[in-house]
Image (cartoon, rainbow, N blue to C red; front, top):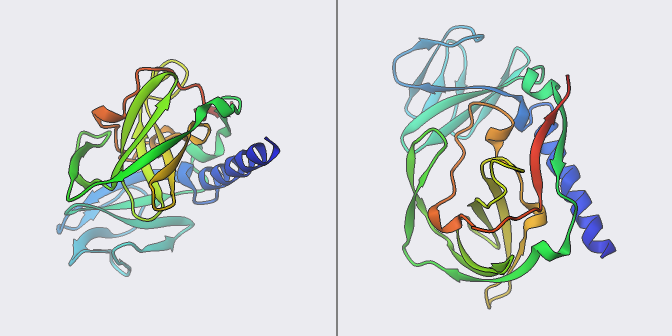
Length: 237
């Protein structure tokens, strides 16, 4: 139990660093969708446009997947299908400076269970984002497990042993944000998987406007309450 608790506490510290870091998740102030036509952007000098997949301003080019510092803010290239956006992270944004903590449910071993991962073959699913955009997404496979007396199967994505799921449960909108994220580790060639809801975490859009988080597909919406993992963002005065 000590190892279980220590690992969870380390995970919480890593989460806080990712959220509250100088240019962490909570520092996002804007996502500007761009085109080939130059346009002025609030708070940024010059005009910005897309050129052969890169983001170009007067004296600056940000390549696909790249980033650049400009006047104390961090600019990141973002792409969704054929759409390209410029994301702006400001360490002095109210969204970051007002953070107090992330509220969590108490650690409870009941909400850590074992599952079975079955790889998908040439399967994809339309995942709707919080802004209504639907993206055709490759499915890595399905994880079957039991939780709270309910049998479930999550659609998961991602390469390598760690898979990703967006899920909902009966706590959403009452005790937790509208949906949450979960990493599921697949161990061994037999598909054995660890499904630990104590490490369920809030989507980026819980911390700042401008994120286009994926919503849970229908198969990933549980009917039971899952009182485990992160609950809500807590802000100071």
